[in-house]
Image (tube, one colour):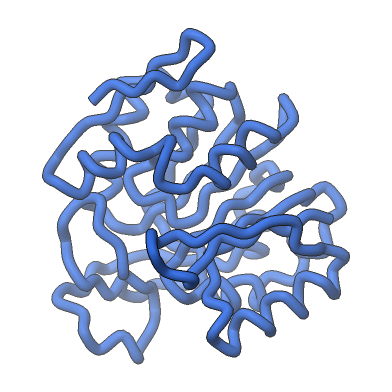
Length: 231
């Protein structure tokens, strides 16, 4: 699938089933607020895409905006499509895609998956309450702070996180990155009807962030929403 990203940029996405095809086709329309946010990122910034799925937003950030991108996607089915998307768009020099989970703990555990179809969602790493899993994929996970410390990677200026309900717990487990002055903005998928929303908001406000904008991620529903926090 080819998508015109404007300014002479054409994005290419490999289709391996209906969900991965949908992710590619809808990259510009599904979450307009995310595209707007990526478009506003300053050149030479470091972008982290946590829960990257088949990598559509990472590809957009790298191929359309030229951003140095670290992407984290533990599902091997998703990562196979993501790797092909990196190859098709010739952005292997900009995108570092890692088949690991950023999590509440560092170690070896399982990714509990509701489906193994490429492009699908709903998987959680190291979540014993995830009882509807149809497949358990062995997986390595790190807290954000541990990952940066162990591998000495560039700290992010911008973080996009969509990890199907574990956003708060992952942030709580990595206080150092939240205190890092170079971290300018975070976009999170949260449900305002849950206790986690208020806890996440309180945590981020305590580190100097504020909500600037939000948008529903499911057509016709108020929640969940993508919330953009800026410091």
